[in-house]
Length: 311
Image (cartoon, rainbow, N blue to C red):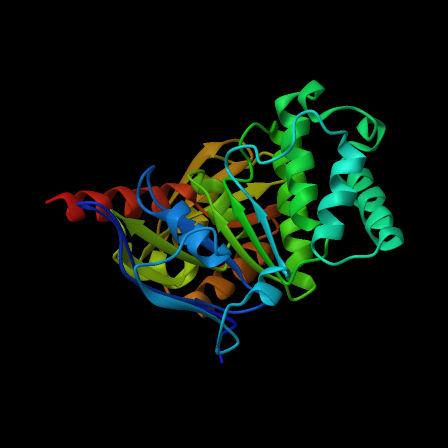
């Protein structure tokens, strides 16, 4: 049974259809990427899940039952726009929010201390939120979403306002939540973030779901079987010999040297074949240190599906 189900959600604001029969489900222990342009309906869907908005029709279920107030206490939400009290101190605010979600005072204080330390804002616990930089406000916003140890974590554009180090911290935290079998529902317009951390991805446009599948299946199904893969290397390689050698491997249609320590491979094959490609590359002893789906294909799919929806 799916953990979180959105079943034929519809929402309109006058003549504007914000959501039309939006239906999908997400499992615990998965990182779900919700992709769409501004105004596509992502935030509306999230707010319906949270109970902030009511759907005109349809239902949101958790473990087969309609979401109620008790379950929503176990949801952590990080909004795209700041949702903090600007004149309240960081530590006091996080303890207050944790207690609103049912934690007692000692547990709330311990959780506040743990998350402010983890996110690098422990020295700012006594400062008012409005005195923080935008990046640190975003860190406190993330702490507010996680301080009560939620089962479901909804992150709306979590990398907004963060520098590369902060974005890396968010990725690490999201992966840690997955290891603890939390359900992570993440909206992002930064496709690299989706490519890096998500197991499943859904594309929504004008309130309608265009596709929903695992990231590997999406790239295989919508990318005409071609899956550009970026390979990072620990040392420079021969720019003529290595592309020829890699190009001869099964499923490889082309290999390009992007820079002395990075290759892009045009590959055709299923996930099992991708694993075989990785093993073969390691066997070539060229210093493979990373092997990941290129963001470029997801971007191409995104633009292609949006343009078809407009036609």
